[in-house]
Image 1: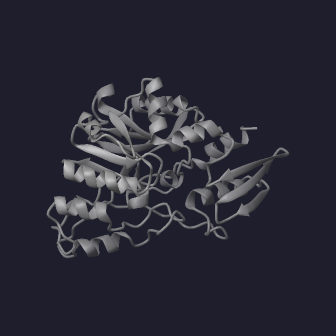
Image 2: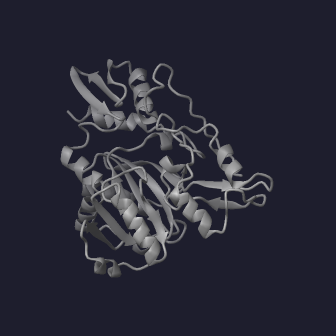
Image 3: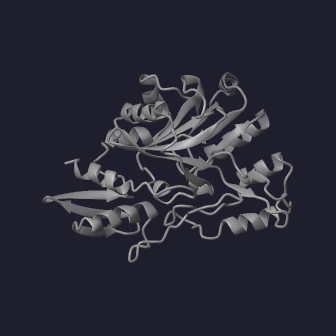
Length: 333
């Protein structure tokens, strides 16, 4: 089992906030700036700097990004249009709405990906879909969460989150999908329970617990594995394909190893929507190969950029990204 150096400790007195907000609050306190808690339930704070007040929501949502930039990033289909305008590579896809013509799905090759157009945290995302039955089930599930659903071609590779602040990549995390490694003794159910220790059930913690849902059951079934299966020692299996930390994924810092080619792509993607603070999701099939257009796709732009994965990764160093984020916010007026 990989050795983790995960060492998150909640900020004393502010444990009720999400981890990313805790990180920003800690930086505000380090700078001795006036801090006001407006609504702790909604992670809403106010900071005063040089006579001006700055409202910050969930640690990164602020005047540093314009309303239109936030809106673009919050809509996966709209994001596609702005990436396309700048010639940034993405998967071939179609948008479905209620009453859609099923013939449009024939333009998408298997394997496929299905996701709601305007949800986050990996909600109702299904990946590596191999046949029409799986596709129809995934589309139906996605429509339970959104009136618009995107179906796109699956791009095999690993997903990375690039944190871009004011046009420069400051941190990169490999987000590994929820996984467990066997020890030859414990069942899959027991291994999941063991890995969940020290993880949270909400965003007050950087890493969240693995939940056994429909997608996990589907992936276990595809591997002919049940909850009572005992994996051999060192045998590693993935419990889902999407790598969101909200569904139990691991963050691994790779900032120092990523080629500049992909850092430049992330910076261009943020610029496409005019985002000053952004988390850019890029899938790369092999980042150790000679960089090129055929090796990547940009998946999403995220104005609410989760900072905790970069400061408290499952494996890797603390990138202390809050200083760059707060600087950007305090320059926005």
